[in-house]
Length: 146
Image (tube, rainbow, N blue to C red; front, side, top):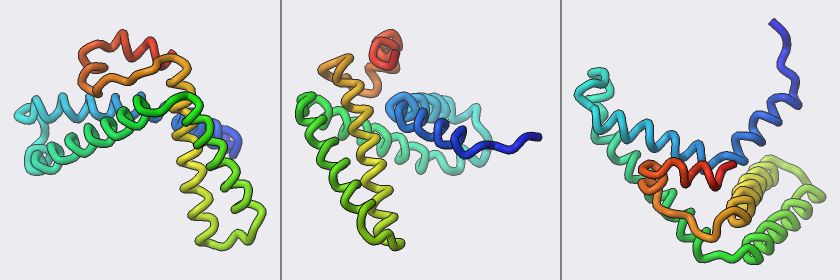
């Protein structure tokens, strides 16, 4: 078995970050189907059914929060926010890089990648629909992720 190169791992994670919306939708769809067919799932899944339902609600609320932010932001707003985050990252990177600074830096990096994805989406659509809409109309999802 060959060794995994660091560049390959970085590429994998950057691909994942670029597709956070798709990942979120797929995870939501999978869990929703399992909950709707709970009697066909394992005993252990059924024992945690209430927790799975709570997780579904949290996932839906998280998507809705992103959707509201996206729909109320212009492309210029997103670009400006992204630039501001990038500037803060550069300042953090130039300074002392202790443990707290690293944690702060990686939170900023995550936020930067999030805004980068929103900018890509904004160039394809001006408005996101609800999470359930994309489950009912997968062709609409394909339009914005291609």
